[in-house]
Structure formats: C-alpha cells, structure tokens
Length: 264
Ligand SMILES: C[S@@+](CC[C@H](N)C(=O)[O-])C[C@H]1O[C@@H](n2cnc3c(N)ncnc32)[C@H](O)[C@@H]1O
Image (spheres, rainbow, N blue to C red):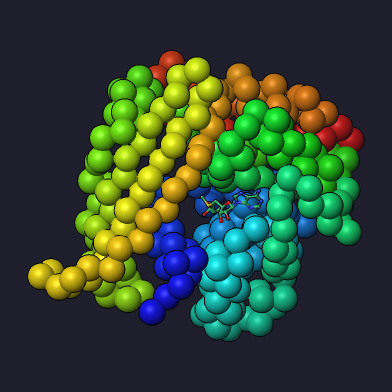
C-alpha cells in the first residue's frame, strides 16, 4: 500500500485529471523569455515536464519528496514517449523550501513562475511576499515572472463555512480505483485564511474503502496584493490578467495572473 505521502501525491494528480488549461500560457512565456525556466512549487511536474519536452531547460523546486518522485517518473515517461532522453536531462529537480532556496543559477533564469494557486500554500502575507522575492532573485535582467491564483467570489466564500461538499467521484487512471473526494473549508474573513480538509476514499463499490485525509492552510490573495508583491520584490508589472490568454481582469473575474519583468 502507498505511504500517506505517496497516496496524497498520486491523488493530487487525480485532482488534476481535468486539465486547468494553463500549459499554453507557460509555454508562451517560456518561449518569450531568454534562458532557463524555474518553477517553484512544481509538484508532480504537470507543467515542468511539458516545458522540458518543448525544449526548455527547467529547474523544478518543491519541498515534498513524494511529489518530486512522481515528477521524475513523469519525466522518464515523457522522454520515452518523445523518444528523446534529452528531456530527462533538461529537468533539474530540487527538493527545497522555496522561501529560502538560492540556487547556484540564481540570476540566470529567463522565466520563473508559481502556478495554479500554489502561492496560497504559503499561508502568511510575509511568506507570499518572500515567494516573489525568490522569483525575482533567480531571474536574469529582463527575465519574466508569473504567478497565478484563483479569486473566489462571495458565493464561493459562503460555501467555506465548514460544510462537507462532494468534490468528485472519478477513476484514478493509474490504479483503476474509483476515488471519491469530499472537502470542508472554513474561511476567516479577517485574515483571508482558509482551513481546508480534503478526504479521499478509494476502492470498489461495496468494498471497505481506503481513506486519506489532507489538511491545508491557505491564504487567499487579491489581484491588488499580487501586483504589490511583485513591485515590492523589485519587478515591473506588465499585466495582472484575468485568464490564461492574458485577457483583462474584469469585474467578476475568477483568476488573477500577474506577469512581471525584472529590470534589464
Ligand atoms: C498545488 S501543488 C502545485 C503543483 C504544480 N505547480 C501544478 O500546477 O501542477 C502545490 C505544491 O507546492 C508545494 N509547496 C508548498 N509549499 C512549498 C514551499 N514552501 N516550498 C516548496 N514547495 C512548496 C507542495 O509540496 C506542492 O507540491
């Protein structure tokens, strides 16, 4: 049986069976940038590996060894599918805390990013600000940074009152087992902190399920805060966009994506 860390890393990929649709944005920004790519909180390599397949040198930083083990496996599989062993060599996997990591290649990256709400996992304002400093410290002059977060609306937040909500019932393509996920979130409006408990049950209908529990403390951020974090880190904000095509963030938008540049 999986260890809890291995199971939760595998279930992270079940969470993302439905593609968020953000890869083309990162491919476009990496193509615009001159130099290697850095992903902080890279997880299981959902984005880092396709960026390497596209020909970029990628450094993937994460503090969870179980997530990084899956990233390495994903890289091996992608290299085999592409019949190109260079794909594996183009990915440098670093187990480290993004808050204090300083890579030897700091100052040389053309593009550095934090995708899909990972910023929330740094659950204080100061830690989130520090994440932007880490991005900035690793960029070469003229390099690009991007950070993407969800903007929950009032209805979303109203559901974060501790009630248990069925998130999905779907098959894990890896194990073939059916996974049921329920989650309960509690939002503190004063701090923007969300305490999230996710419960995964997997098994055959009628059989005793295996249950895994994940607890996350998240700090929500506004689009204005993203802008401020970037400028406080010494970056020049190009846009705070509202979607993965970098369209404008209008009222009612549910994502904010900041793209910023280090002065050349
Ligand atoms: C939501 S997953 C993101 C995965 C990936 N970026 C993607 O979009 O598929 C968040 C990741 O952030 C990592 N993480 C959280 N805090 C971190 C920290 N302080 N330093 C490095 N990684 C961190 C977790 O281990 C987890 O793998």
